[in-house]
Each structure stands twice: as structure tokens, then as C-alpha cells.
Image (cartoon, rainbow, N blue to C red):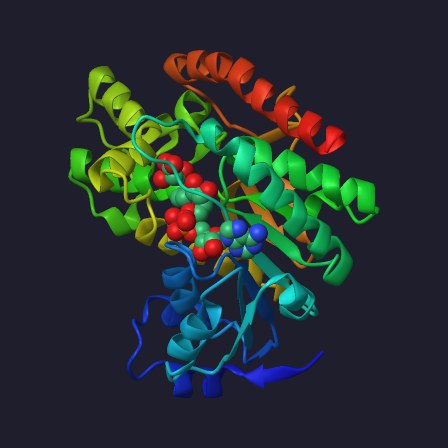
Length: 347
Ligand SMILES: NC(=O)c1ccc[n+]([C@@H]2O[C@H](COP(=O)([O-])OP(=O)(O)OC[C@H]3O[C@@H](n4cnc5c(N)ncnc54)[C@H](O)[C@@H]3O)[C@@H](O)[C@H]2O)c1
Ligand SMILES: O=C(O)C[C@H](O)C(=O)O
């Protein structure tokens, strides 16, 4: 496998880029060449995500695919003076080239919500988009780690799994629903309320990615704050569950979270790359095939490694409020999973 020096990645990437990722990534002398493909790269999430992946020194090749607009996005992002090579691909006949040799494929393709819609209202359009993109992934880069952002994540991930099963390429270690934005929100909201430094806060968020299926486990938050009442925790839980809707309403018809989602998607892809590169103890929450509850897909902390998911971690001790939330979310999440599986079987 081709390797390149981390110092050369740093030299070319650190002088004028936000150094957040750059500082966090260096733990060995050299890193393997890695290709990342973004499907839906010209969209609201896709564009800032492309920029964030361009400044990630673990990426050597960045392929930007969309049905329209990618030549411009690729030309723009390619001028950023970091190590990775950027290429734009547009239209279905270029999808194979965008995917070939990819280590990580990120999927933010699909329509976003408008005020008054649920994520499930996106199913009719996005299910077909995710399905067709996953058919291509199975053909052109069956070993890639796949990060699904397109909503409704609770259903699109089961759809992706069914497509890969049908193609004979399914590996449960390599398929992820990206729920990092829920964790990002829970950390932000908790830090503000508890008046603790946000950079130190950790909050697992489990379940799924819609409404009450989003279950932040504030009882496990570190650093612990003793100044929050039960009412505070309930309000923080509700705000985390409604975080997406808060943005949809504020954008008033111009889409849903794009910038915070790109940030979250970049954190998760970075974790996948670190895991692939053998960095130890990389743990993030993600919606994956799971047996920690009776549901076949569930978001919880997962340890990432050279093959993707190394271990799906258990829920840990829950407060009574969280136990109640867990039982309440199960019927909703079960229905969304079944809807996805049924769609994949019928279409
Ligand atoms: N998982 C999460 O936490 C999370 C957070 C925010 C948004 N989302 C979801 O992400 C999706 C995208 O949101 P957005 O704001 O970027 O939307 P957007 O409309 O701005 O961008 C979507 C892009 O997908 C492209 N696209 C459509 N069909 C495609 C196909 N077949 N192949 C490739 N590209 C295709 C479009 O051309 C467009 O550029 C939505 O479904 C949204 O609900 C998920
Ligand atoms: O809320 C949405 O529709 C987008 C996304 O799932 C989010 O949580 O911001």
C-alpha cells in the first residue's frame, strides 16, 4: 500500500488551513494513501464537507460526485493548498470512476426537509437515490466504508444493507448511519447549560436519527455537572431531539442543517480513516447493524478499526428517564427499519 509522510502532509496543509483536523491526526510517521468519495458533493452539505475533507491530511484523493455542479465545486476546492488531489465527476456514467478504489464513501445525496415535514417524508425520493448509489458502490468499491447521511437515516441504512446483501457484498462492519450531528448538538447544548468547556464534553447519543429515536445519554456525560435538575436534562434531551427541526424552521424553506452537518460528517469520516489506518481507541456513535437491543440497527458507541466496526459497545448504565426513552423509541425505530427493508425487497 502506498504510504506518504505525515510531515509532508503537514507541510503542505498546515500553513493556512484551520488546524483542528491537522493537529488531531498525527500519531504515526506515515499514513497510507486514502481515497474518499462524496456522493451529493455539490449540495448544501456536500460542498462544505468537500472543503473539510480537502483539509484533512489523511485524504490523498478526493472524488466529488453529483448529478450536476461538481466541475465547479471540484475546481474551487482543488485550489486549497493541501496534499489531496481533487476530481469532480458528474452524471451516472462517471459514477464508477468516482467510486473506484475508494476507501470511504460519504453519501449526503438527496432532498432535505422543509418546515412542517418529518424526515420520513423524504423517504419516497431519498430511498431510491440511496438504493441506486449503493448498487454502484457494491459494483465499484465493495470494500469501502459507507457513511450514510441521507435521510431518513433510520430507513436508508437498512436499505443500503439490503442492497449490499443482494449484491453479495454486505459487511456489517462497513456500513454506518452518520448520527454524529446529534452528538455535536448534545455536547453544545449541554456545555452551554452546565457552563463547562464545550471542548471537554462527551455525551453518547443512542437509538436512531429522528425525533424521539434520538436518545442522548446525559447521565453518562463527562465532565459531570451536578448543577442540572431533572427538568434541565429533559429540556436538553428535547432540544437535542428537535435540533434538526430547529434548523429547518430557522432556514424557513431553504433546507436543513448543512454547515454543522458537514462538520459532523467530517468528524465521522476522519474517525473512519483513523480506524482504517490503525489508530487505536477510535470511538464514535453511529447507527449500525447491532445486537445490543432487539432491533437490528441501532446507534451506539462503536470502536473503529482497520476493518470498520471493531466492536459495537453496549449502552452502559441508564437513568430511569433514559430507560423510559429507550422503550419509547423502539416501536418508531422498528417501523422505520422495516419500511426500509420492505422498500429494498420490493423495488
Ligand atoms: N444524517 C444527518 O444528521 C443529516 C443532517 C443534515 C441533513 N441530512 C440529510 O442529508 C441530505 C442532503 O441534504 P442537503 O442539505 O445537502 O441537500 P441539498 O439538496 O442541498 O443537496 C443534495 C445534493 O444531492 C444531489 N443528488 C440528488 N440525487 C443524487 C444522485 N442520484 N446522485 C448524486 N447526487 C444526488 C443533489 O444534486 C444535491 O446537490 C438530506 O436528505 C438531508 O435530510 C442528514
Ligand atoms: O433535520 C433534518 O431534516 C436534517 C438532519 O437530520 C438534522 O438532524 O439536522
